[in-house]
Image (cartoon, rainbow over all chains, first blue to last red; front, side):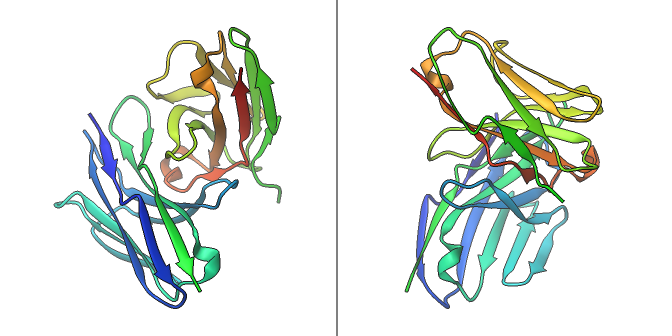
Length: 111
Length: 114
């Protein structure tokens, strides 16, 4: 089986820092991606970790620990426009290249 | 450059009918994947195509099929529609198979089955 777990909801205020965790259990692993999806919109790619460690892209950072089957997305200097759902996704080592998305974390940024 | 485009935007079908959804990838992208997203859940992988060949298949029944054309556009077909097929169907493209951790999603087709 394969599964990803994320908190269902996170709330924070503008200017704050928030961390969204993702734990995974898959038969294989080819890296962890993060996507953002606003209500009514399409998912957009944020970050990718193929190896352990921290990747930084502007206000967003993502971390991966393969030994712990764990990663997180860190959002700094939160803005109202960051209110959205955030999904982690891994490629499972199955037939072809199956991507498994987590259930998503709904982030609400308050003024 | 245009992003990933999908048609139609919305679709209402009756149980038992057939539906065809279409996707055009970003120019130069050769890999196309299809996902089903039910409200409040993450996208579920259905198919991946690369260079007109199926490279991945998710856990969906045989009622779901797809194909990719020489211009890399793709169609998703669903036969014998069920109420549970109501969802947002997303198409995503990536440059090559090896770089498909970064996928570009289209706006989706909202399918309602009544």
